[in-house]
Image 1 (tube, helix red, strand yellow):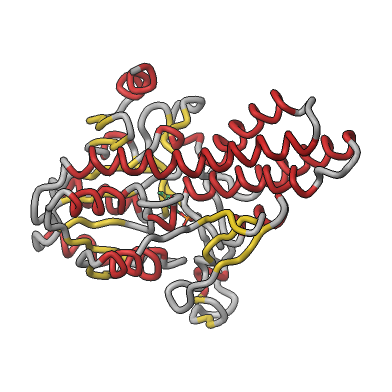
Image 2: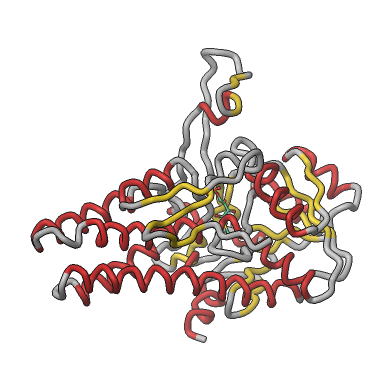
Length: 346
Ligand code: MRU
């Protein structure tokens, strides 16, 4: 089954509602920057590359929505559109990368007729989507070579087709390995508190018929100690210039355990996720989400009323714990400032 996380249909952006998967499979249609921003904020769409693609379409939708407006209104409306999308989520740098790319097009074409501007922005959004799938395929091919036949691989959160425009980053590596004839089995940790592992990764792997075993987050150490995990592959929301990796909360814990047990820890990472403007992971803004996500699930609350709650949604894994970054340009072992800079220049 081909999973189309985002698709252009009937002059609107349609996105799978990831909040209700796997119980229900439904698309929601979007027609403006503000509604797309709300879809990103509320996690209808999530995952760094998918957020970037959604934001690109948000810009194009805003231009289409305003194309009959007077030029002054069109231009101020577009600026508001960029701003509302920029505020939707803070950690995944792909959001800002995609908006910068859309802005570069906007700056070149904004003098033309509104309708032409809107069409050009829409073309760019289509291109960003198509490119994302190509990049994931390339990363998958490089990553597949790192996994031995028969590997049992742990992943955290969902870095799959649902987190991208298709194929996936970490799950793309698994798909490519299977396509290359390797037998791979996946251990998905459930990923408290939003359960992207239990709900999304498990669902994707079941659809793909790749063997998958679900564990709770606190079972990873036991499974490594008993020799049931051969490698870890995760995605990322932002990699700093020195190779520090921000990813879903709990990733750092897995990386420390992997080092303790001599298990390779790989990060699948498109170049659009590397932020060379920041020196280290300490500068990555970490989103703090609603306490309700920790208190319980959906409407059911199991935590004691009145308890204080923290809910940082991401953590930072220091570069020294990362065995290699898997990118569309190749594998970077022992990532650091020099190796990453070389990658951009290659
Ligand atoms: O809060 P989310 O679900 O957007 O977090 C997603 C992750 O942490 C993913 O691992 C990351 O974006 C990589 S997606 C290919």
